[in-house]
Image (tube, rainbow, N blue to C red; front, side):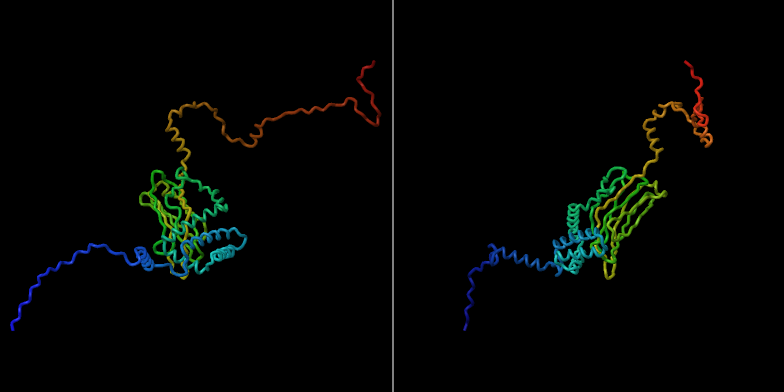
Length: 356
């Protein structure tokens, strides 16, 4: 039996239209969607470990910590004992343990940017508290505290006034470099001053400070100082006669906290009140006189040669000096009594008396 051929499909299939409608918001609205996205990002970001103080809490503890150290130095007792008592009072005030403080200190010292930001606020608050308590009165007595960038003795420091050096590969060095200009003179003397304080006690709290000077003819000179547990530090540099007449090219320096691998690493070092003092070499007196005569050569002949009498500068002997002294002559006159009295002879008769 012959089958009929299939009837061709005469209809038309339209291609799918492009998606032109709007996207419906998720169930619950866009607010819920963004909230879920924020929680997801927060959960993916690294969180602060358990037992580590927050930045705000750490800042408050550090402010009281440094104030307690300053107050312990004013007590009439053993410094180590007074310091321990005041620091334990700080931990008791903020209801934390010494282990929590040490752990937080290690955690934040590994983050150089966060630690520097925290301590910038700490330094400002400590200085404000010290001024209110009158503890900054001694700084006004410093002979270099009022120096400016001008004059024969000037503060030429241009860097930041505060830095934090921590014992890690990123923040273990603070360095600077300063190029010399026309204000520098041969024979200038320099003093690099700064205040330093380690955040906590450690057996390895020791840093290295170096100040280097580069002169013409590739001549260099440097001075090194160890920074330990003392507040004030000075690196003094006075050029010797060999380089006293050379022109200075640049000044560089650094503060380095070594990365020890011992059991107790060094604590972070705070450096503040940085000053670089330059002192010009005083000019000789004959040089000043020569400059005056060069400025007005006509003044050299204004005085006649015989205006002042020349005095004899020969040294006299002691005998000559004694004889040259003016002598005062006196005459001692003794008046004789013409009628002496003798008791054994009676009252003498007066002579030379005219009779009436």
